[in-house]
Image (cartoon, rainbow, N blue to C red; front, side):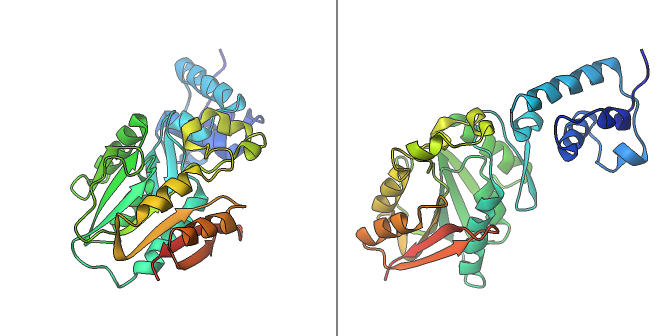
Length: 278
């Protein structure tokens, strides 16, 4: 059998974008991307078979993040596995809005809560900026909680962040002074939008996507309960779908919130709401 090195293998691939092929081979070989071209490695028969298997999975539509079990968020690497929702770049807007709100205003001993935490990417990204905060992350999926705990351990943050299995506020006890903020990227796909989803989303957990008939079920539950858990000067930060700005603002006002601000993502879409008391 003819010898094949890493660069040769890449040059044969035309079924997926080149950067994805590079990610697959780097994941298998455990090497940085530049070495694929500067110092290409000879591939054994077993490695070639493994790469071809991964390539087939990607061509069949499985997300690259599930194949490599890696996703990058807010300049950090997180583990992600099947059964756990894959973080999107748009959610970085949620992190940025929290940083903007609390810049130079952080107090010692504050608590924050992240609902529908998934990989734990939101609290893990934030904790390095907020030295005085402790975080609780909750998710209804045990797979997600296990994944978040592993990501927290990777960055040695177990003493700063606790991850619990819970259905939103179900297992959360209100803090004496309330949470300084509550963040959430809840499922918000409506029945109507579900039919238009990209094929790759069929690989992700349905409970991490579907928000009921109109996509607002989780917002109703979160907003209606948030007042019992927020500090008087606290905020609720919500990621929203591309067409949900007015609907979620209306819900917030119906439940007595009057300080409402919206943030756009890099695609100029209204992506995050910051909700507080009057």
